[in-house]
Amino acid sequence: MSAESTEHALSEEIIDDQDASENGEASLPRASSASRLEEEGDVAADYLEELLDIADIDGDIDIEVRNGRTYISIVTEEESDALDSLVGEDGEVLEALQELTRLSVLSATENRSRLVLDINGYRQERTGHLQKIAEDAAASVKESGQPVALEPMSAYERKIVHDAVADLGLVSESEGEGAGRHIVVSAE
Image (cartoon, rainbow, N blue to C red; front, side, top):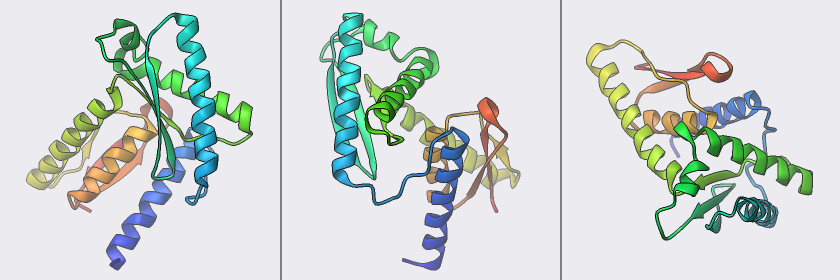
């Protein structure tokens, strides 16, 4: 690993930890045990399954552990307006459900969770959109030489953009506070 790659990896770890602490999340060790993450996934799946039953919404729950995080997906084979309502406008309901699910895991395991909840592929689609935002910002910075401020976004989404910008050879920093926290992309 080159010094530049190591520096980038360390800066991403710092950004991740800063973004996590801004959202009230404790920084978790990178070497989280797989069994703890699997337990986290089981608790989250039980919580979400009960929620779906109460709301009388059909959906299958998939659990995956990768990159030191638990990823929970709720999907259905048919088009479902009910699942779409759990995403909400701009993912607002999804973010709230993710936080409630994290609280459920905290209550059951006494460990803070960084699990990621996706419903009907919203986050996957949003990741593609965020990649495009990063590419457009990078192109603008390269053309004009001027920094570009992006729209406010969640810590998770900022992490995706930071990674994409770094892959494009530029620099990004999170600025602002709370709901107004956003990324500024620059050449240095």
